Image 1: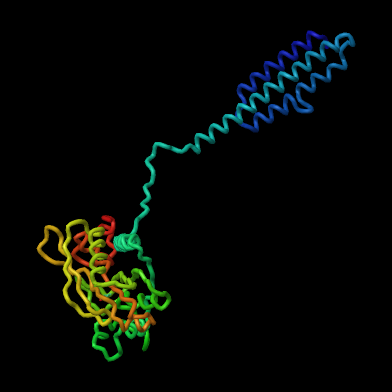
Image 2 (image 1 turned 135 degrees about the vertical axis):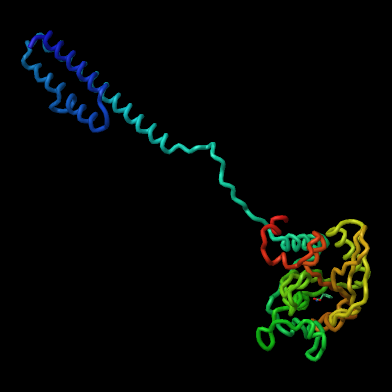
Length: 334
Ligand code: PHE
């Protein structure tokens, strides 16, 4: 073979390679093409075999030409391979593309129940006045629910609070007052506490009664407290909770655990009617004595209010049942 013949062969190979690279389709075809030209027994390798037949003086130049061919061919094939890789990547990216212009899926996070909102609001008003929050069991013993609150077995007032008995001596509590006994047993005076929680009564459900409801009990025991202090605390509370301009009225009432006992009424600035908001009174000395407090030194007052009632008055809700039916059209308004 002459050098010219070799040059022609090289040119022909290069042209072939270019044409086939141009037309090649798919990874397998490209790999086959690579083996065909650059494999151990491929067309480039076969041209190298001709070196041996060439005149020694020409081998140097022929070697240079063949090496250059090998280099360009390798370069051309790997360029094509890189192109194919890029193509595949682009295809994948296009397939996995996320359409950011679609509107998102709206999730609603929910919020606190109106009764919880009102309970927390009342708690925070009294916490600012220096009261702490205590809680007690909803299944209560007769002792805490009645006896310790100065309601002995034969007392007719028991009937008012006789509710759902679990067994002979335990019942679902009808009020949060037993918590004040539990707190006083654990604490030396002064005591300044509020006790929120769920209560149960033998009431038939109607617009203003519910066998399950919530109360907040307040208890303050310290030296020198009188009804005047109670009235002041309630005035502060009313102002914070309902707003300015309310007037307050105490009327006489009866609770076995307070003496004297009062019913507290308030009237909105532009209203004609008085609204009952809670029962209250000076803690009966018998109650303080039962927990070992020195009744010569200490006096105290307490009240119990219904959380549902507070919420109904504040938001103008007319039926207590809406708190329990979980109708979202109601709940979502808070
Ligand atoms: N425990 C009483 C009730 O449930 C309310 C109350 C509490 C009255 C504290 C006076 C003092 O009706």
